[in-house]
Length: 130
Image 1 (cartoon, rainbow, N blue to C red):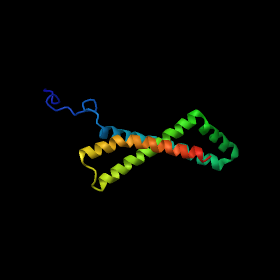
Image 2 (image 1 turned 90 degrees about the vertical axis):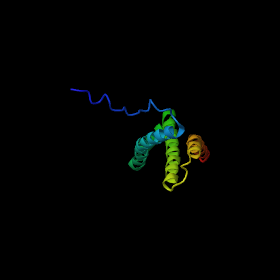
Image 3 (image 1 turned 30 degrees about the vertical axis):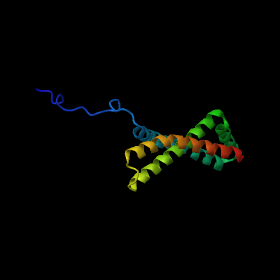
Image 4 (image 1 turned 135 degrees about the vertical axis):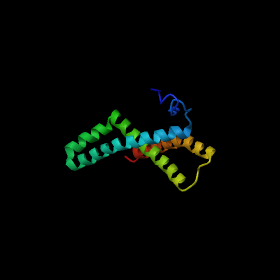
């Protein structure tokens, strides 16, 4: 019996392709979407704590005030900003704009920079508003 898979072409994999900005941003967009799913569980935890009483709310607030809690909240804020910008980029494509290679690549390179800048701005405003 002959090996029928020998003559079939192999499907390319991520290891074959050279990473380009639009490909990397597509992967990061999926990762931030998953991170937002788990981060929303933390938002629900905070809301449940607020509805459960002062003692439990104080404990959850204490946790979010620790270094680990603040890192988690900072990461959640960044994931939210990054995913939002990626969603706006996809919305623009849905409207039929931004398909030019140089423009879409430039947008992919700018997205992480703007998402970090927005995250830092949100945290500065939040810190000053206390």
